[in-house]
Length: 168
Image (cartoon, rainbow, N blue to C red):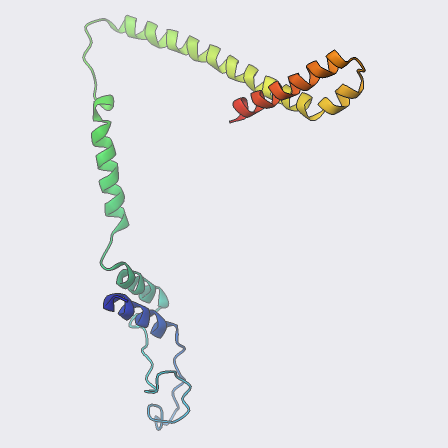
C-alpha cells in the first residue's frame, strides 16, 4: 500500500475514535491501564477544528492527494466547451434587411407549429397502440376466423415494434 494512502487511512481511523473523558483531577488520564483505546499508547488524536466537517475535508484531501477545487474544474470545463461552441454564439453580419430575417423567423415558427402537431399526433397514436397492445388477447377471442386471428397477432407484433420505436 502507498505510504501516503496508509497515512490517510490512519488519519481517518483516528478521527472516528471517541475521545476518552478526562477526569476532573487531571490524574491518570494518559498512563492509566484499561483506557479502552486500541494501540496501546492511550493518547487520542482529536480533530483540530471546532466541528467534524473540517476534519472530513482534511481526510478527503489526504485521500485524493492534494487540494482540488471543484469550482475551478467546472469553470475550466465550461470555458473549453464555450471555446468549442464560440463560432455558434458569435453574431454574423448579413447583407440583407431585417424584413427578410423576420420572414425567416415567421417561417420557422410555422414549421415548429406543424412539428408540434405531429408530436401530439404521434403521442396519441402511442397511447392508442399501447391500449390495443394490452387488450389484443381479448380482441382475438371475439374472432374465430384464422386469417383475422393471424392478422391480429401480426398486428400485435407490429404494434409492439411501434411502441418500442415511439417510446424509445
